Amino acid sequence: MKVCLVGSSGGHLAHLIEIKEAFENEERFWVTFDKEDANSALVNEKLYYCYYPTNRNIKNLIKNTFLAIKLLYKERPNLIVSSGAAPAIPFFYVGKLFGAKLIYIEVYDRIEKATITGKCIYPIADKFIVQWEEQKNMYPKAECWGGIF
Image (cartoon, rainbow, N blue to C red; front, top):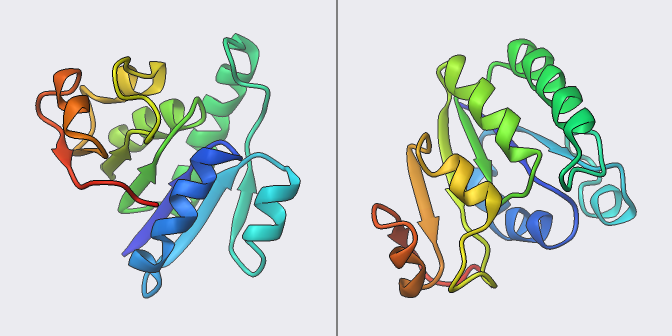
């Protein structure tokens, strides 16, 4: 199996790093921002950089969509995993078209209000995981697995 782990740097990337051992026996690659935290944490990992800033940036959303098409066509992952934020959206939608399974993990600190990424991905995710039972009020079909940290 080949796994794509995609997410913004910072806390979103920290979530993915916490679960990377679950994929230690799988071929995997990462998509994130070219920032110090990503570069230092992902030494010896196959790493691709996506465009940022992404907050309400239509230009980079379009660029990341074309990047998703290119990378997912080249790599052909069976599974795409993310905890957000914006780079996950084009990678999940393009990945769905290419037949990849999608697992999304909603962030730990959004208990009462859904994230934009979560709202966008919830309808297409094969598995949507939340870390608090209260988050199921926003995502009724989600599975609560508890905190990652």
